[in-house]
Length: 249
Image (cartoon, rainbow, N blue to C red):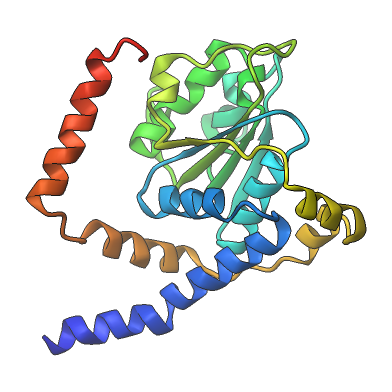
């Protein structure tokens, strides 16, 4: 009993406190979107991935960038375009003439937080490079499997499909995302604040990390150990079953 109490107290004074600081820091950059920010951190702690879908210019990339900075660890931004290749994401094996062997050079996917910007501007072949990484936290190149650093979190942004140069995400790709959120336009008071406050790029540059990968792993382990009652599980299962037969879905 004492050990569990001490562990809970450590979380309140350590990772949990730093989580609150991280959320507060992101809210200072992205105004009026506290619910979406809470959902983004929920996906992170649940071990899932996040898809942000909306029109250009509403702060999708800024939100993903802010989360990547405050949560610490190593992060990479991948700008998806129609000429991006899977090797540009995963990495390549390079022939070393001196050793007469191949050496694997990791790609930008080898990070704790990966920002896949405008993911639906890449071809389906390139999008498929993320499937194994997002599902199994590993990548396979030239017959060799390479584990990704934990925690591993993908934040992808997506433009509406009616915009020029976009490809629809296949179901197998959508299934890798735990949540899909939209930001929407800011309310008038937040829009006025955006006009008079410093540029969001300056605020991003001033952000500093408030957490570490170890903090995230500790909080994720705590979230995984939460008790869920039988009635709640029944309700979840009913919702899942309903989505399989509902005409609108």
